[in-house]
Image 1 (cartoon, each protein chain N blue to C red):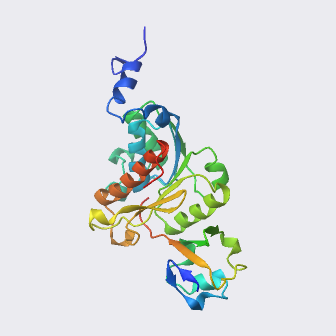
Image 2 (tube, rainbow over the protein chains, first blue to last red; image 1 turned 30 degrees about the horizontal axis):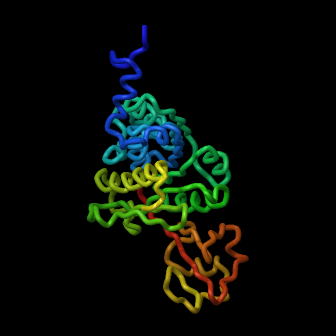
Image 3 (tube, rainbow over the protein chains, first blue to last red; image 1 turned 180 degrees about the vertical axis):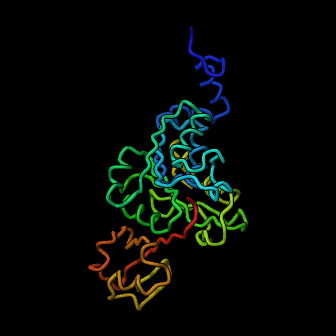
Length: 214
Length: 66
């Protein structure tokens, strides 16, 4: 007997889930490996978007655990409070799309482990909260992987206009989204964080499909 | 003339990068420095002297996201 998911053949589920994807995107999406540094407001939303469209390989890195205060913007459930974020996120992603290979690492990214953690990534996705960590990752990644595309975010707090969040190509391989100024001190909420996450996820998707313009 | 993020800044010439960055508002740790198109890594800040026609781009980050 053929293996099934939800009573349907695996092949029909696999094909059906790609039915509304952009034409001719499947092969490149399936082959792609994106490593997401940070599994919070940005990272959890980016990972869900990329998993849903079938990006084949995702590595999630975060040392943190799910807290109640995360739930106003991060894609975790009340039942997951206390879990390692990457473990909880992997669980959720597998429910959305079981065809994605997910590597969940409970780790803090430092200058000393960037070379190891991101070596197999096609694209580096920065999704930290701490500005020092963002700068450290750019500094380190540009040292170890000067040609690897990197997508980052800065400034997505408050309830300011959606339209102040943009994506800029800062260097040939560096894309930074956000408004550039608003800080977490004024509060962070799902709608605006998801806009920045959407910008990052769409830029990553464009890069996977060979489009390097913003 | 030295330019910093496109703005002329004559005073910057002759300073090392670390001293220059420490005088600015954004904490040094939250900034990545591009000098004439090349990213300068942190251990190199102190030995890098800003030259009269250098173009500096300071890529600064603010918090929030994770």
